[in-house]
Amino acid sequence: MTGRGSAGTADSAVRPGTPETGPPETASFDPGRGAAGGRTLEVVGIRREAAGIVSVTFDATGMPPWEPGAHLTLDLPNGLARQYSLCGADERDYTVAVLREPSGRGGSAYVHDELRVGDRIGVRGPRNNFPLVQAPSYLFVAGGVGITPILSMLSALSALPAPSGASVEWRLAYGGRTRDSMAFLDRLAPYGSRVLVRPEDEAGLLDLDALLDLPPETVVYCCGPAPLLDAVAERCRNELRVERFAGTGFRPGDPFEVECANAGVTLRVGAGQTILEAVEEAGIAWEYDCRDGTCGTCETRVLAGAVDHRDHLLGPAERETRMMICVSRAACERLVLEI
Image 1 (cartoon, rainbow, N blue to C red):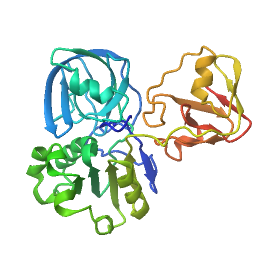
Image 2 (image 1 turned 90 degrees about the vertical axis):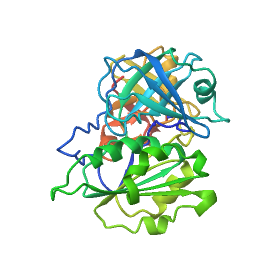
Image 3 (image 1 turned 90 degrees about the horizontal axis):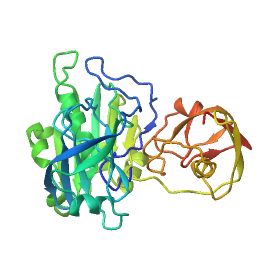
Image 4 (image 1 turned 135 degrees about the horizontal axis):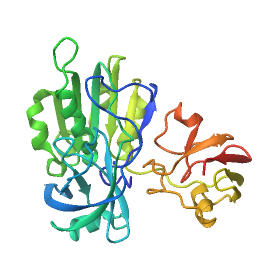
């Protein structure tokens, strides 16, 4: 769940529901973003899941249980940090899936070509920007490797009884280029008719107009490539939660000032500069990963001023007091941040 050309880092955009919607009382779905400290884990399994997709399983001894929708940051030996959705069989199974990205910057290539069983990799997390909320019913829409964060949600929902004693109502529509490119079909098979599998070369694109003709109480979760997410957002009239593989890139804006309240300094942020870059230039240490507004690591408390939010994570209520300094900017002349 970001470099989300790989499974993992998240954009948890919510519309029109609010991020305060609570998790199921019968299970622990913590929507918090706090991450466990960095650790080093041993790779105990690597498996081909589909054409261009491998899963990597770590020895998770001593690691906390993770929640549906969570992702793990891998600090790879080639110097790159990448986030991938956890998709193990249960909350103790630290498995991620990685799509090879030929046009990427080398993170997925390292995992596919260099990583071996027995290697030890630095990890951070788990972190959850894509939590499963309580709802009467769900529609999940996955494209390609976007199936990964949804797998654990299906397992959790299938284990929860509805108030009537029946299982919670959900459906999954899963599209991909070819059947061979679609991972985890074996894990989805036991769900039977709840799952619609549509390889594009066999059945064409998903019929989103039909799929999104839903009762108003149904919550829609979507993960996959940007064209799919945009098409779902355009048609969906229900509460929609999405996880993006990548942000929309840096966009310049007017210069402004940032007062770093904790550090006691005021910085000038240029038109072609991010707040994070200005903070780094000033020698102030601040945690970050994706620099794309999708992982949530650089989330910062706003003490004063108006924000031009450009991230893919914070909901309306959170945006009143927080921002992602890797992409978001000031919508005023001066911001005061808890830095």
